[in-house]
Amino acid sequence: MILKSKFHLVIFNSILILCFFLTTNCGIYKPVDARKIDPNVNERVKKNIEEGRGFRVMGGKKNQGGTFEFASSNAMWRASLDLLDFTPLSNVDYSGGIIITDWFADENSSVDESLKLTVKFLSNEIRADGINVIIHKKTCEEKNKCIIKKIDSTLAGEIKLAILREAAILSQQDIEKNKVPYSMPGVFKSER
Image (cartoon, rainbow, N blue to C red; front, side, top):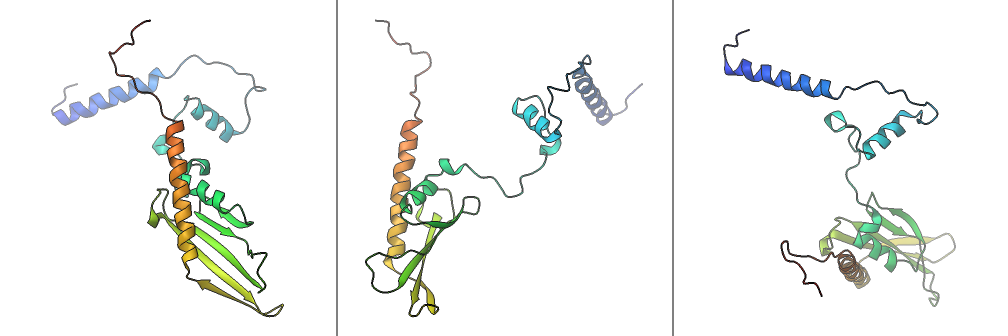
């Protein structure tokens, strides 16, 4: 067989290499005990991929909601939960990036007023524009007649600043905890 162009030669070599890789993974049939293998296909695939014995063509099934870190590794999230531990939380959604407290009031307050805090995370980074704090105030004059308003006060800014400070401290503690001592290659410690 005579190949007339470099293009045909490249195609032919590519096919040969592909055939080589496809046939080298074939081996002798190994029977398995059905009692030791999970019948759930998804669990077997997950186990094989975790053990490094498999691959997915074209990246497999894509994540539907994006990539998320664990909540315990996000310093802003942990700082917010630490700061808001004085009040019950009505909605906490790490993947949605929001914390909403339940209505709470000061015990010493004589007026029937209560507050609700909403903390929105706009970024995982510790930045002033990465978090938004909203405060709602509910004032009830009668039992069934309440007025709810979004309020702009310095309290929202103070809460935001407190979260950022605590997050910076937690982040620094994580760095110190995970620090690995660096040794220069080729430099040996003298024996004593």
